Amino acid sequence: MTEFFNKTLFFFPLSILFFCQCQTKIESEGEIMPEFVITDSLFIDYLGQLNMVDFKEDQSEYLLYDRQRKEFVRVNNKGNILQTKNLSIDGKDYFGTQYFSINYLPNNQLLFVGSGHFFWYDRELNLIEKKEIPFNIKSIYFSPGHVNLVQEQRLFTHAYSKDINEASTERDEFLSSHPFLTVFDFKEEKFISQDYIPKSVQMIKSPGKYLDSAPFSLLHNEELYLLFANSPEIYRFSFPNLELMETIELNPGKSTYSQIAPLPFENYEGGTFEMVFENSAYFGLFSSNEYLLTGYYGAIPSDVMEEYNSTATQEEKTIIKEKYKIPYYQIIKEGKKLWEGHLDIQFKNQGGRLFADHKLNQPKVEEELDYIPFYFYELR
Image (tube, rainbow, N blue to C red; front, side):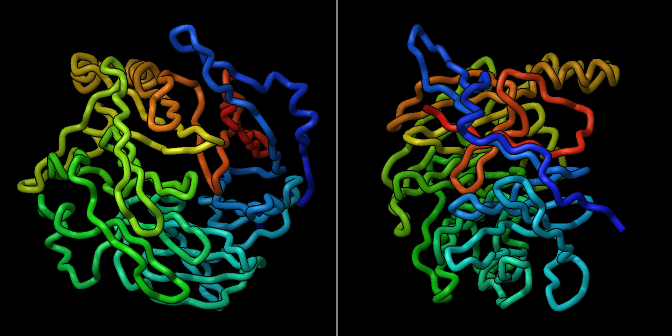
C-alpha cells in the first residue's frame, strides 16, 4: 500500500512572499510592461507528480490528480492532504481514468466530465449522480484537457451531435459543417447556444488533419475568449449567447513562429505529431487582472529539422529541442499586443489563477523532490 504524508511541509503567506525576489519586469521598446508577481504559493508534502485539477472559489481547497497512481488528492490551502482516493476501481464511486474536466461547483459538489457521462460527487468524492452526455466532445486531450469551461451550471465545450456518422469526422469539410462551439446547461439538460468555428480560423481556411481542434477558452470580464492551437488569433464572444464580437490578431514573431500546414485526410499515413514538433502551436490562453496572456512553442528551422531527422545524434537532438522548442508568451490588453518574448517557465491556468511549478527566471529543479510546489502569479 502506498504511504501518503498528511502534513504540511511549507506554506508561505502573502506577507512573507513579498520579501522574496518575486517580481519580474518586462521591457519592450523602452516601455515597462506589466510585472509577473508571485502572490501566493502552496507546498504539498508528497512523493510523486500531481496535476492541478481545480480549486474552490475561496481557495480553501484544491483537487489534484496523480496519473501514475490514478488517485485524486484533496489538500487545503496550507498544503495539508485531506484525502486521497482512487476512482478507477470498480465500486459505487467508480469513475474511470480519463476526464475532460473536473470543476468545483457553487453547491460544494464536484462535476466530472468524462468521455460519455457527467458525474456529480460530493466534496469527499462520493458519487451522487451520473448522467449520459447528450453529445460527443471533440478533443484528444484528457486528464487534464482544455476543451471545457464551466461557469455555474453552464458548460462551454467543443462538441458535435451523436447522430453524426464517425466516418464523416475524417473529411475536410467536417469542422466547417457543424456548430461545434456549444454552451450547455447541464442542470436543465438543454442547449443554450451553438455556433460555428469562425471562418478565419486556420482549420477552416486550410482544412485537413490537425492534431486537435478544440480551442483554449476562458471567461474574462464576463465575455468568452477562444484561442485555437494552430491559429494565431483570439476570438471574443458574448457569453452565453456566442455572438462573435472581435478578432484579435496575435501576429507572432516570424523568426520564432511557423504556421503549421494541415495533412490531407485522403491517404493519411500519420505524421501529425511530427508536423506539430517542427512548427509552432499555442499551448495556452490565460488571464490575469486586465491582461490576457498567450503561450506558444517555437518552431524548428527547416534546415535544422533536416539535420534532426537524418544525421543528428541523440545528444544533438536534445540540444536542438532545448534550443528551439521553448515557450514564447504574448501579453494583450484591450485587444492590443503589448509584448512578445521567451520566458523560461511553463505557465498553467486553472480557476482563473495563473501558476507554475517554479519561480520565473530561476532554474527548475530536475531531480525528484519530496514535496510538490505551486507558485501563483498575477500580471500587474
